[in-house]
Length: 285
Ligand code: PXL
Image 1: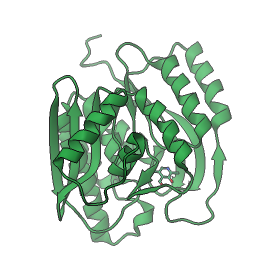
Image 2 (image 1 turned 90 degrees about the horizontal axis):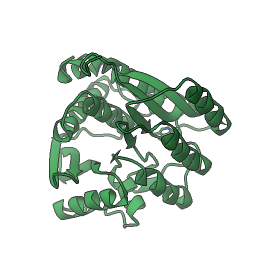
Image 3 (image 1 turned 180 degrees about the horizontal axis):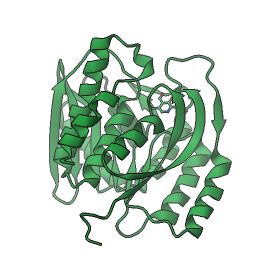
Image 4 (image 1 turned 180 degrees about the vertical axis):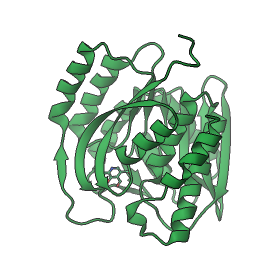
């Protein structure tokens, strides 16, 4: 079958936060809207995500990962991409490396979003040992997309807050590629008040690219997961990385803008649902 009509498959490995629009509840609809068949490997089930909610439930699904993968292997399942986000535990970091080994074919893109921290702080469930373990997961990736906090944890650098420049961003991107990936995207980059965006680096060309949009006030949950899902959707639909960071920035800021205008509580995530039509247009589908 010619490549243009063969539908691509993604296996995405993240938690299910039942309420709060992050991880699988955003990855699945975004990837589906982008025309990608999406297989899911849930790492845990939580009643809500862990940011801004008290008393959430957490069921670890580590024990299910190996039998699910065994069954998939018996089917001879292949995939165009493996995409990991929030992992439930350190044990799962080792398990995920095995999933990569089992399902990575010669053309498979391994995309790791080391979802574990933001704004200079680890998420409540994680410690520095977990952050160190994430290095090995990133090392196995072809493409990674941390925010600045996560990148600093991965590289053992101090978090700079707002005090950094282009040289810092480029050093961090090169450092991420030295860990293993051939391309890296850094999210949450801002050189100017009111402008926020992302930077990308590809080892093969040695080129850096940037894209910025307006910065909207407030801290909205799940936007990193939305950004990563759109980035992957754009790359798998053939956009070069410089275009893919633009698509992901525009989609994410569009969802934040709507949510801000509606005055929705930020911990419930952003209204990405009404942006899915724009995603389909931006991808030319
Ligand atoms: O959006 C990242 C994320 C995913 N999953 C869970 C989380 C978070 C961030 O806090 O708590 C369970």
